[in-house]
Image 1: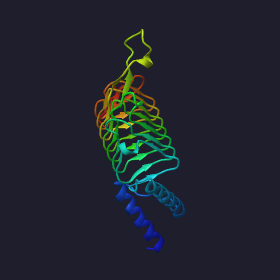
Image 2: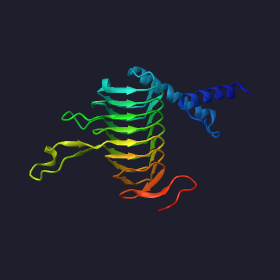
Image 3: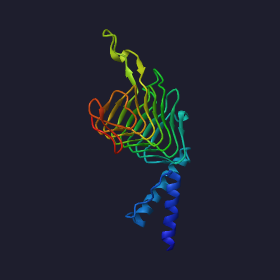
Length: 237
């Protein structure tokens, strides 16, 4: 094996091990492109070290508010322009090998008037670009879950019961959201708690989820309804 190929193989093995995945680099990835990727990761690691998060990789112009309420696991990648506000009762907790793509906003609470519960990402959670996660009532992502671009999740809603009082002056109520292990939420979907998206379920792109999703089912539409079960024996409704 040529020295350069040996180095590439070692880097690939390290990447697979650290990311805890079974797939390495694409064969079409050139050594030059791999070098650019590594250079970018070195810069992101330096940013993370400078911000007291040496176990992570941090992109450009990342904003972290209430840092003392944020917990970050190892090999977490936070993309450019991400904002995390960890102000909440349980804070924002990000597990090992999670990725948060650029322009995502994670809020543990709506503000200081009522501290929300917070947001927890278990291990190997992939949050897509331009997501919005509002953890006022609590958001939990199980292991190996993922979202597409533009997903919005709300776990808190305004009380609107008194017509004589402006909604902005009424309180909020918690509406927790749970995304169980292996579930996938497609691009531009809207999740309105209280809901549980079951293990291995798939929410099709552009769906609005307002009720629980059964494990290993596929839902789509507004509001989202079951269209089939996952697997070779899945049947359409």
